[in-house]
Length: 232
Ligand SMILES: O=c1ccn([C@@H]2O[C@H](COP(=O)(O)O)[C@@H](O)[C@H]2O)c(=O)[nH]1
Image (cartoon, rainbow, N blue to C red):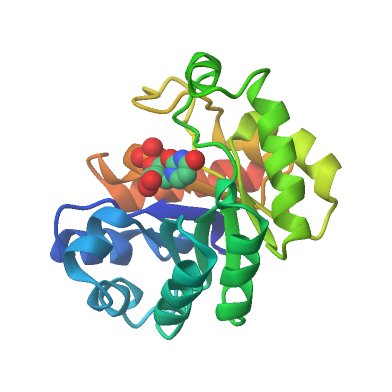
């Protein structure tokens, strides 16, 4: 069975748990995602541990956001770990995004537009007037002009972003929750089936899989539901 286009967020408290989750889900998904919690605790060792022998694609979600020179150094430093995808914040601006792209030519740079945990009310308090989709669209266009070939947005904005940037850009959506699941700290959410049907290329799903009693079985069930949504 072809693995589904899901990146399982391995937001685990320790390396052993992350490696166990990775081994359970990798038969069913294309990608595992390492975020700040694990990387700040274990550094580069975490990549080899979760990659294991499976060769699963590793997505390093560090959301780099600093001046261009610093981001270039950080992107170059982590690119030797050969992550398939590395995130930067789009709000870091064009020169920062370009610096990451040039420093890590073998890694796909994904620009995070507007965090999926932010609601419209949060955005207004931050000073971003108007609907989330306006800010996401603007940041998406700026990121692609600066060399990013992947974008992180919520499932709510996939259709708009696709029409803004065209077909060649990888759209990655966190904020994915199976029907009836608790959205927890995510504000802009949709089901995996809806996100895929709207045109997302890679769905980030963490706790609905990793906090379930059987992460392998849950990943398999979501993967097979996606195959029914868009048969190959
Ligand atoms: O806008 C963003 C960008 C990144 N994330 C990350 O995705 C996962 C989501 O995990 P869940 O448990 O499915 O909520 C997590 O690692 C975030 O750091 C995001 O949620 N939103």
